[in-house]
Amino acid sequence: MSLSESLSPHVTRHTSHPPLVTVRNLTLRYGQQIALEDADVSLRAGEFAAIIGPNGAGKSTLLKALVGLIMPEAGTIAFAPELGRPQTAVAYVPQQQTLDWAFPVTVWDTAMMGRTARLGWGRWPNRADRERVAEALDKAGVYDLKDRHIGALSGGQRQRVLLARMLARDARILLLDEPLTGVDAATQERIMRLLRAQADEGRAVVMVTHDLEAAASACDYLVLINRRVIAQGRPDEVYTPGNVEATFSSSHLGHTHAHA
Ligand code: ADP
Image 1: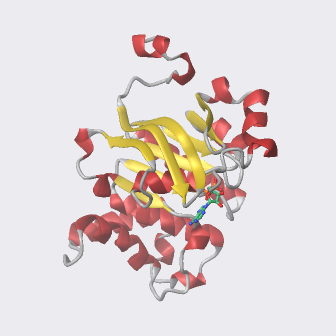
Image 2: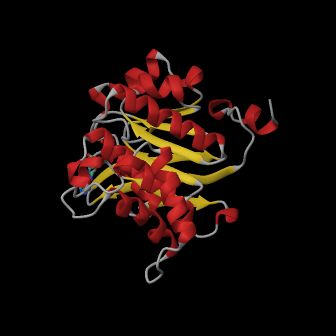
């Protein structure tokens, strides 16, 4: 056990990689309502982490803060200097149902948006971009669907197109909001294998889910939240009846509501 691990028994890690992202004392709110209070979380290269909690726990809000879509009320989010600009270091996969699937674009175009978002507007995709997109579609198992309109896809296919768009970005930090929701068991397994491979290649992978079972069996690190961080660590450390109760029992919902 390293010195830092022995000093912080609640945050032991299987890896000694320095964090790519360090969240300190983070509080996020919408108007008067606190969505997440005083959270400390670090995300490491090579690690597949899951953020777990019930509906309304603040999971999506935490992810949005990491992408820069929501500004912290208090606290800090620090990216490792080696990452350069956070905009290119982070790829974000929002919940499938938040997107407009009637938008008239093909699977190929959607995956290409992962490249153009990275490279900036006003630059035409070159051959390397096209190769990268083809590879991403192939890894996600949707290359054969490349000319299809995204509106004509099943839920599982849509999720895989979003994964292809994420892969095309070639980011070090991958943030996914509920990637297992609305897809069949075979696709879930494919997604988990793909995310594991991304972590093994040295990326920090973070998945929001309410599926504690799936996360505990496949992820390296669990962050249990319910408007605050209830527990975090390796699954064998934090997947305990007490932590599950504290995270999912409804008595915790609303306890941090602020009133004007
Ligand atoms: P989770 O992803 O864990 O289901 P969210 O992060 O979406 O939870 O939401 C956390 C809390 O913030 C919830 O109480 C939710 O109602 C509230 N919330 C989420 N988005 C907004 C918003 N755009 N405006 C106001 N409140 C919001």
